Amino acid sequence: MTSATTTGTDFAPGQEISLACPKITRTALALYAGASGDHNPVHIDIDACRAVGIDDVFAHGMLSMAYLGRLLTDHWSQDQVVSYEVRFSAITPVNSEPTCTGTVAKAEDGVADLDLTVTLPDGTVTLRGTAAVRLA
Image (cartoon, rainbow, N blue to C red; front, top):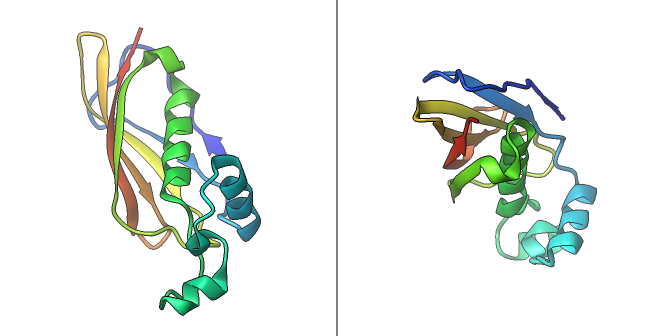
């Protein structure tokens, strides 16, 4: 994973930070299922997916949320994250390579409000959210 480190207190509206996530492999999904305890078959069993009309397995929404959390903690310590919330908007297919982005919406009084997205290479946004972080 890569990210451009941006630190300091001089955040301005429109400034972006990003994180290129690793390819979402079947192995990654199985490992995440084990670590999270979320063994929902739609994330790990292609036969179970096909039985309900889904072509293939897809990533856990919370895995995308975890990557967004990493985007934040790559730039700020955990105690600087004031709030963090998301809304899932689309699935993340197996073998996709999502990108997490945080865009400064507002920065004042030592706090930056960020708009967050997880986006697939085809432009599909799979997750939208917001966060507030203390800059100092």
